Amino acid sequence: MKKFMLLLTLVCLTFLAVGVKADIAVPDFDPQGGSIATPGNTKISMEYEKVIITYDKPGKEEMSGHVSAVFKLKNNDSTSVTIPIVFPAQDNEFIGGLNGQKPITNFYVNKKTINQIDSATVTINGNQKEISTYNWQETFLPSEEKEITLTYDVVSGKFYNTYFVSYILATGSTWYGPIKAGEISIIFPSDLTDYSVSDALVNSKMFSLPKDGVLAMQTPIKYKINGNTINYSFSNYEPMNDVIALGVADFDLVNNVETQKNSGQDAASLLKLAKLYQELSVGAHCFWCVGKAGELAKTTYFQALEKAQTKEQLDEVILNFTTASGEVGTMGSGLEDKFITNSVPNIEYIKYLMSSESCSLKDAACISNSYGYRDTFGNSPISLNMNSREVNNLDFLQKASAKAKSLSHPTLAKAIDTYIKNAPIAFKYLKQKEVEVQQVNDEIQANVSASPAAADSYTSTTTSTSNQKNAGSSQANTNYHNFLQVIIIIIVVVAAGLLGFLFYKKSVRPTNHTTNGIDNSRSTQLKLKEADGSAEKTIN
Image (cartoon, rainbow, N blue to C red; front, side):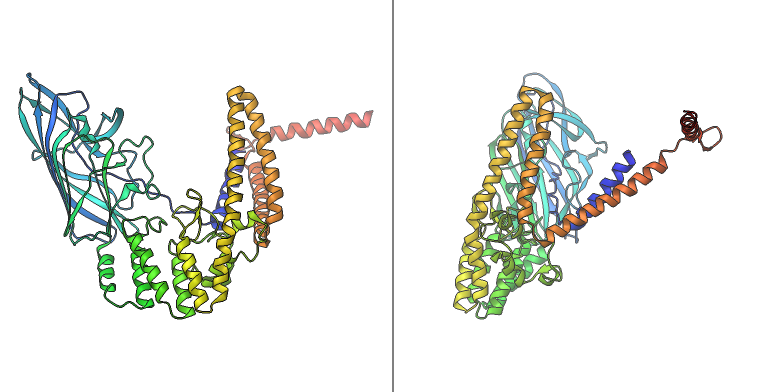
């Protein structure tokens, strides 16, 4: 039976994977190195921390760098003490998240190499945390100050158009008192701009945090850009859960942007510049999330919209804006071929989405679920934002509608206006559904608290009732494509069931290990019993 269920599951998952486009998984961040720490209570303070991270010319998918760090520690006790010191090699919850991230290599302490990676439990912001570490011991005389020098190599991975650089400050909180003074410099092979650098952990849509979030809060310390260098400086600072986590844009792409900025102010040139800013801002289907590049992309799209002089130019601006995140509405789920050009929706599809041609204006489920009214990971430019209860980029759509009317482009103007008009219907419907789901969850939780045994029965009943209600609503709103998809699913499941059952029947026949053949004794006994039954019927 297990083999049958496995086969059925695989077949169904394969079908669904073909039919639905999933968002790219959000990558875990992968801090590489940081402040030294001590696992136990101590009166050793960190007087000074100076870190220099220097990156070489990047490759296509990664960027290698070398780190040198000096830590000045002081024994604030009147007795000698020998303490363990640990260095955060990499945290197990982060490893493997980003494309190209690799472990720290060539790790030296005071010019002596340490190769073995162990683990240690440190207390950060009152929470105990086990981290992967390089470990060693240091002895301090009474009131002694001592410098510890570290060097090691890192490789920063690239995700989409962004290299990711990180350094853990949180481990510096394990020492006695605050860090008295600190400087961290990150040197890159090319100059940086204000739009090519971002605080990567600030945007929760771009990175998933570890389970307890202990080492995953963006440091509040502000950086300064000076040519090709990022500088941090601080004094009397006690880190909490801090991580320096930066996204640094592809240097060649930044050069292309700088060149394009000087190529003209006509609609075509501005559109090309907007698309380049957009490339810098896109990471994991995220339209406006990486640094200032997203803001500049949107501003430049507005400028291109104003400069558009023909219907064709306007269509191109609208198409590029609305497909900027690589996703539009329900893109990837049952689209008609006539709306797709080289895997990208064309302008007719955008109009089709906005105008909801196949939906009755009273059909809230159709409007909400089928034509772009949804809050998607990555902030699809023409979707509903269910957090703010607003249409994403409504200001752009309103200006686009006005521009379409000024260029005598009624079909586009009508489509945009219909989209905006239908938004309240979708919000009301989706809010109602949220309330219904919450009510069901509250009732289930109440039953769980009252009686776990009764809760199982209740869960089954409420789920069945909810499914029946949803099925009735869906049947009224299902268009031809959804109906066809249901039929295909049923056919696939039935076929998989038959195949799995036959496979199961064949595989469960017992084997006689003595004769290395098939044991037919059970089958023979069944036949004898049938024969005896037949004989009894004949006698009677």
